[in-house]
Length: 155
Ligand SMILES: Cc1cc2nc3c(=O)[nH]c(=O)nc-3n(C[C@H](O)[C@H](O)[C@H](O)COP(=O)(O)O)c2cc1C
Image (cartoon, rainbow, N blue to C red; front, side, top):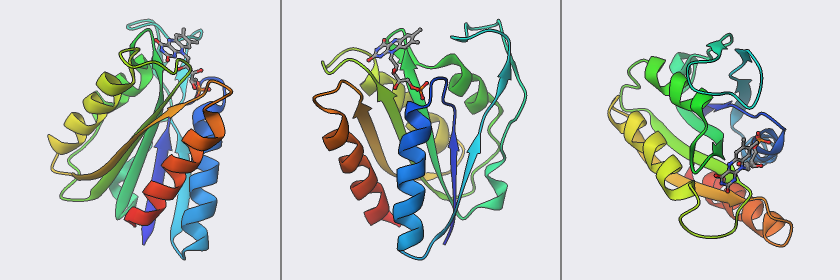
């Protein structure tokens, strides 16, 4: 299967999960590409204070995985802006993940991943999985592994 992993990563955490996912999906025989959303303007991006530069299209892929950080208890504004521009997904399979620092519930992960799922479904995608990756040191490896294992089992 031709799978696109489309991410925004400000400091590299989300990207490192994408790289692990790519390795695992390719080991299963999938053709997997990571594409990064990029912006102009200073970081961390603030709503209305950046422009999207690279806006990867999902059209080249049979399935898409979207990934982004949580920022200020919400989905990162760059991924929000990207989702606003997302074209119809036409029943493609999709999966969404976020990375976040805080290990506690109600610190932005659930709402952020729900927003990604809802935007994908509103464009016709079948969202087959969501994951919240917690970056605090004690949970990180276990959390990344869970995301990579669960997502690679979906495709
Ligand atoms: C400005 C800013 C706000 C953040 N807000 C939150 C937050 O509300 N909840 C949380 O768990 N982590 C928060 N984080 C931590 C990031 O979500 C976390 O480090 C993430 O893995 C970064 O991903 P990246 O390296 O791909 O950019 C915040 C980080 C920054 C820089």
